[in-house]
Image 1: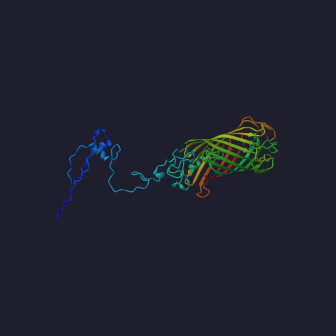
Image 2: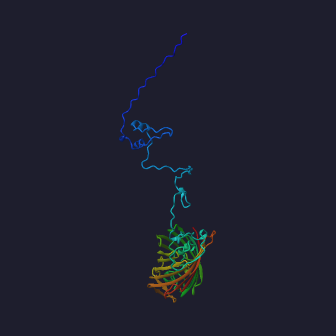
Length: 425
């Protein structure tokens, strides 16, 4: 039998690809030129071949990924670490002073109402201080927080005055007891009483003694505005007329801060007196009165503040001939004497003057007399204490204040004031 060999099939003829004309290197992008100049990696066992100049086809076939311009730095060798989500490699760990995401937040200085600013290493009084054991301060010391932390006194020294109003609004509930001795010519310019025998008490008086218990509530909106309502209960002890007691003239006061700088503060002040007291009994002056003005405060040092005021009182609806206009001005100083975290002692000194421009007054003999620019001036020392209870009542301050006339013309000979305030936010 014949064995036939399988036919031999010739391999197909494949035409060589048509090569594109070479592209000059000068026409290629920079990153391809740099890639072409880098030697290709070779296995260590095979001999390194001779370098051949690259062709354009080789460069186009490789198509390396674009490289960013500039020098390249290699990553440091070492074990890899798993970073928290959202963190940036190489960033430091967030500090306790940082905000969300490890972004540093600014620490703002306190305003004028914060006294020493609580930035001396301690808290602003109360239980959040850092152990302020107690410090006595000399007058005019310009070094804030000598022992590294401000106590309660640095918060309260700017609010310490009694007769003069503070330029800084705050929220507090105040109870004030006043005892005034030898109030001379009580219907003078209808400032205290209404005209004797007309709207006021029937009989003329050489002087009267009187006491009052005033309740006032001040509500502050931030540090720029406050509204105060004051309700007095008055007890009058005349010489010729019968003793009386009852509701006096209520008042509403607004404060608007115009300038609140590092050292200076200027506040617009406006008070309205309403005739809620019985004028016939000597409990009020029988008419509406307005008192616009300005309050000033200057920080000499964190322990010492100077205060000033300028007010203009005038009646509305009273007797146009008998009622007068009164300019009130004052200068005061409050100084932190002693403090620790929960207690402070702050002495005060106030100088208050009045100028009665016009109006009339009734003499002890019942004769109306004209007033022609009468000046009155008083000296008023006091001391205030502040205490942080650490409980529901928070910070409480209280104090005693006296007033003495030093001019022949006077409203009264002397006066005594006791005051307690409950502070709240």
